[in-house]
Image 1: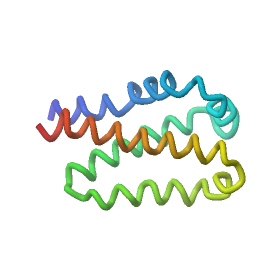
Image 2 (image 1 turned 90 degrees about the horizontal axis):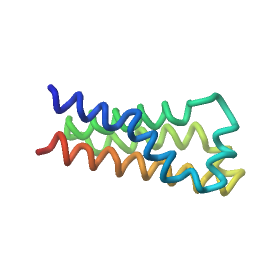
Image 3 (image 1 turned 180 degrees about the vertical axis):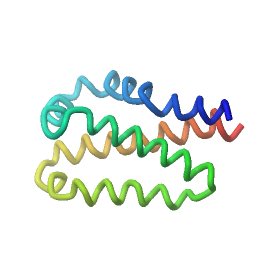
Image 4 (image 1 turned 45 degrees about the vertical axis):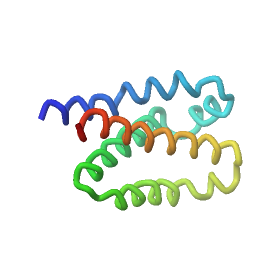
Length: 110
């Protein structure tokens, strides 16, 4: 139970802070942050990482694809119109997948 709590804490705020530190030099990140509701990108990232951990723990790796499919459908028009947004979206999605996998294998699978 403690390892599960640790995993959730690691994929939460810490992951968002590390993302901001790693990708803030890219000018697209400021433009994206100014559009939409404040903090929704961080919340979406947090939820997708938690769901990824849950699906990994259940052995339902294919279900992780549903998270990113739903996210892509919700953002499709914006991704189609702006290449910069699409690239930053892809960076964020890949970061979330990689981060959740690392936390799962380092904390939960051991």
